[in-house]
Image (cartoon, rainbow over all chains, first blue to last red; front, top):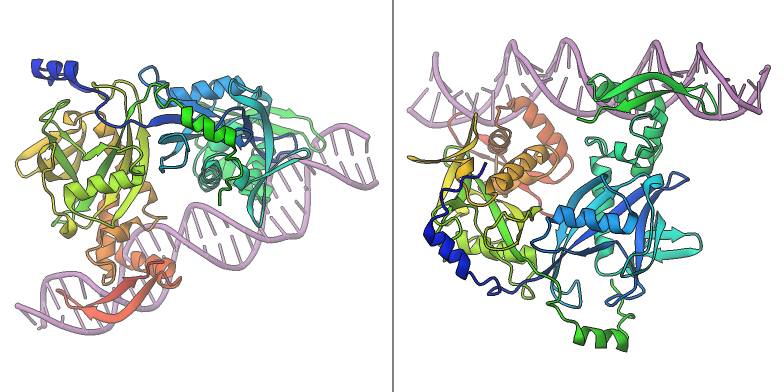
Length: 253
Length: 253
DNA sequence: TCAAAAGTGTTGTTCATACACCCATGA
DNA sequence: TCATGGGTGTATGAACAACACTTTTGA
């Protein structure tokens, strides 16, 4: 798309002698808010316990430094996600870029934050190089803000490393605001090619943190997705406790 | 909010010996899509003609390198905006971060893009240090995408430096999608403390690129802004060509 | 036959859209 | 008085929410 007719001899000479170090350069990281629904359909986040300074011993969201020149930021995020959870090819969208001086005590660090939505059964959580531990925490709310719980372990927002509480807040808020317009919820299905309306409804309920009316949910689902061809009725049903539920499949474009 | 109880002697020692250069660092810039309504109420953008390589002589959106350590990215964007247009205290929101390798021929450059919405009379455009020229271009569309015009001068998307066409596309799309829910349009008013409904309607029309029904626009305006107290009726009118129009004022929170 | 979950139908309200019409001003 | 833009009122249909009711299964 971009033409190259500007690459004159002048420009080539300029590039040869360009001193890349004349500007003060910050470090850049890609950090990822990995969200999933746990086995009891509650919104959960992947946190790692930092094994190194700064914030050694604190819980943080996974992430790492961009290998400048070798990869794009999106690729850096995907690489970090893979190294922490062993997953590939999932919903991974840029969220926001954080760059206040002082957010990292070492030096200026610009963090490009991403949101990943992953079905729990695809997560293969492992503590990486610089993490002592990695776990899924349920996301709950109380007067002091977000609370993260994993069995007996409870962490509050202010216990997190860096400004990661801010990043997580933004990820949840954005997800909630977009859920009605974007197709984000499908990314959290166990199987995008065989799912029921109730399953999708539970995902919406979890993200919005309130219960929804099934008849109305069904109506909008049929109108917005089935009628438009984005989702197809498989003509099969699956047995559960009550009446068997119809199965649908997502048509990826 | 953040506690400091982690600053043990260990951590202090670590920070002293931390080698900031052990990771490959990219350059970071803040680039700004400055949008306004020109004298004929058409959507316009500020472009600068680059005075230096790379892309010397090409038109581009204003921007510049982050002075890492000295300022946040938001501050860098505000500083660059001020240096190009001499304006302060305007709508300036982070848009997206671009970081594909090869987008800048010099070295890896991460660009954090911002959108600025500025009323035209506040713009004091001047060519800065590294710009030969700076002008407002009308934004039009044709089969090949966006076309930028300034009197006799016409530029197409693919003439722009770097991936700036992508950045501009995203800025316009985002603005359009958000205009009904966010209060962005107010930022383009000549005077937020004294404006008429028609004035605000013209801004919405320009951004959406279609005409709106005045009676209906008035109804939603009264419901969404006046009834909720975000905007107050000044009880005054202003003379124009026909019936004098009622004046409203925006209540900034 | 009963509980549980899927699925259908009805009703009332809110909201967007289209549009007919009236009002106040300057020329 | 007429053109011009401001402002009011009304009718229609879509979207949304609440909820009563029916269906199909396993236990």
